[in-house]
Every structure is written in C-alpha cells, then in structure tokens.
Image 1 (cartoon, rainbow, N blue to C red):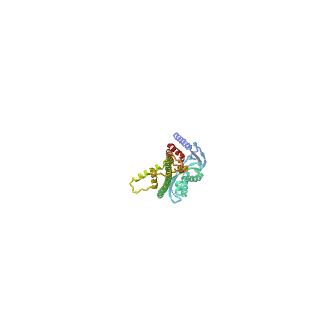
Image 2 (image 1 turned 135 degrees about the vertical axis):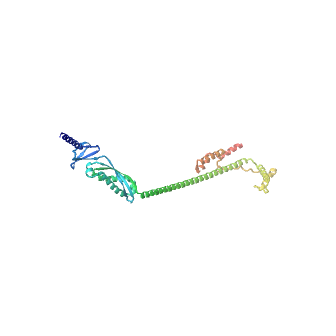
Image 3 (image 1 turned 90 degrees about the vertical axis):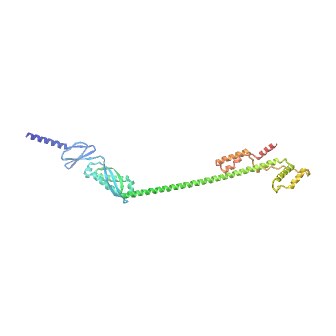
Length: 367
C-alpha cells in the first residue's frame, strides 16, 4: 500500500511539473507574441520569459523582421502581344501583429499572390520596350499597389524589385534581328555623315588652295610687272644719262673732229663682207666737210649754241649704283613678307637724288 501511494505521489508531481513547464513561453527580441485563452484574445506578449496558463492558453509568435519573398516566374502578354516571363522579389515587414494574424490566414502567401496578379496587370499595360527600359517605374507602381492592399493585413511592403524579364524564344530572335538592323542603320548613317564631312572638308581645302594659288599668282604677276616697270625706268634713265654725258663730252668737238670720226665710221662699214652699204646720212655733206678739212676755204662757220639739257621733270632723279642695289634688296625683303602693290610703288622714292647733283659730279670730274 505504501508503495502504491509513493508511485501516485511521484506521478502527480511529474504531471504538475510537466503542466507547469508547458505554461513557460520565451519570446525572442525580434518577435511579438499574441496570447489567446479559450478562444479569446488576451493581448500581446513582449520579448522575454513569460508564463501562461497551460492547456487553455495558446501563444502565437510573429516575426517582426523584414522578410524576403520570391514571386515565382510567370508568362505575361505585353501590350504589343509579346509573351514574356517575369519574376520579382518583395520585401515586407509586419507592423501590426494582430491584423497579420486575425485579418488574413497567411499573410505571406496572400502577399505573393497579390504581387503576381498586380505584376501581370502592370506588364499587360506596357509594351516590351517599355518593360525593358523602365524597370524602376514598374517597381514603384507594384510597390504602391502592394503597400496599399496589404495595409489592411498589418504588413508593410518596403521594396519590390523585378528580377528578370525574359521574352520567349521567337521574341528574342526578333529582338536580336531588330538590334542588328538598328546597329547597321546607325553605322550606315555614321559612315554617310563621315563621307559628307570628308567631302565638305576636301572641297573647302581645294577652294582655299585655289584661292591661295590665285592670290599668289596675282601677287607674282603684279610684282613681276612692277619689277619690269622699275627695270625699264632705270634702263631709260641710264640711257638718258648716257646721252647727257655724251652731250656734255661732245661740246668741245668741232666739225673737223666730227668729219674724222665719220670717215673712220665709213672705213669700218666698207671693210665688211656686205655687197650693199646704206649710209644713214647725206654723203655730199660729208664730202664737203672732208674738202674743208683738206684745205678748201669757206665762210667762217657759225658755232651752234650749246645745247640745253632736258628739263628735270623729263629725266627725273637718277639713283646711284649703291642706291639701286639697296632698292632691289628692299624689294626682295618686301616680297618675302608679302608687301602690298601700293607699297612696292613707293620703294624707290625714299633714297634718290636730283639729276643736277649727278651732272655737277661729272663736271667736277672733267675739270
């Protein structure tokens, strides 16, 4: 009898310990507990060690951390009738444990199903090119829709990201051909634009070259003509000066000397091989002068008055040899620096002296 009582006592103590242990509840720091007793909601349970009445109290723990849910891939028909496989990722967090438990049976499954249907509707209203290039717009619209609908479930949708947009095989092939054609079109446009610019630049270069060549030819002709003009002027001035010197040197000669010179000229002309001789003066006058030279008498000749030198306005100024060299050197320097034609006309005017000074020098030499 005593043994039986001992066994009963041990059984009762063990049952009491087990029942008491079942009432112990530990809530983690990232969790929130909901206490339900006999079908009636009692309240929340904060993190830590808690004890509830066993057997009649049920504690539901909800995770308050951000949860990541994968939206399965699904085939969607776009606005331009292009079948496309689309999937996404949804980030959610429970902000109201009571609503997340009492308002919906499984908030995770409900959120994923809502994301699938909303994503199908958004993709169906857009063309394939818009889907490929405007993923941020899709993410924002899908997040707003999910956040608005899950607010009644105590769930906050923090972020939505489209993972992959995968068109079917036929659409991919068409996109590849379209991309290749677009690149070929751009290459042709760039090539044509390059040829156009090259032709324009080449034409402009040819035009500029022809202009420069024509300008150089014009300047060359102008400078050559100016050089020839100056050369002729200098040559004419030299001839005039030679005549002036000859006139000055022939003043003391009388008619006898001229007759002797004329006879010597006839002698040289007759010594040639020519069969005909043309005399450039009256031969009778020359014979008459020769007779006078021999001894024939005649009235005293009247001396011709000294000739008058040409006026200064006709002969102009006569430059010296050094001045001519200086003028030509200055012309070469100006031509090398592309001097204008008007400046070339004024080159020889800076360093000249009057013809009278030159004549005075000749007179001094003769004296």
